Amino acid sequence: MNGEVLKKNNDTLNLEIGDLVVYPTYGVGQIEEFDTHEIDGDKHDFVMINFKQDKMKLRIPMEKTAKSGLRKLSNKNRLSKALDVLKQKPTLKKDMWIKRAKEYEKNINSGDPVSIAEVVRDLHKDQDSLEQQSYSERQIYLTALNRLSNEYAAVENIDKKFAKDKLEKLLNNDQQL
Image (cartoon, rainbow, N blue to C red; front, side, top):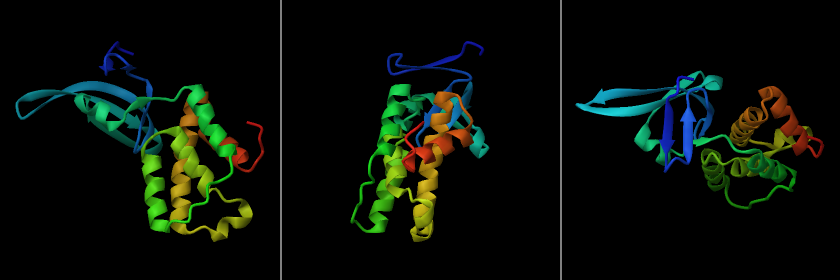
């Protein structure tokens, strides 16, 4: 780390190069650099985030980080609340699929692990019920599961595949995590 730090909202979010962060619409990424670019004669500061799992980089203007929802990884307490959600019975909603799908996407893109866990819990099907799940339902489920397992892996410092397997065991009522 070269000592460069992003300070936001009266120092509530101090980021350094190498820190893991969560960007709501893409999930877990790593701060790669802070840089300045001149645009229309004005200098603007940016933060570059590398999302290795998606082979993507995102440059965000510093003044937009607060509105973008960029945040540090969840603490273990917040993640524990998300895991507790996975142990609960799914919420069965009677709304039309398109309305539910929009709500699920909104929850996923919130970046909040508890909201994402609710989507995972509600859309999870056991092996015998998979053929009853539509393609779009499966895609939303997998997106939510990947977001949650990536953050879980980062917080616990474990392999992403191992984290995903642990979450699926928890969903299948194998309560040992």
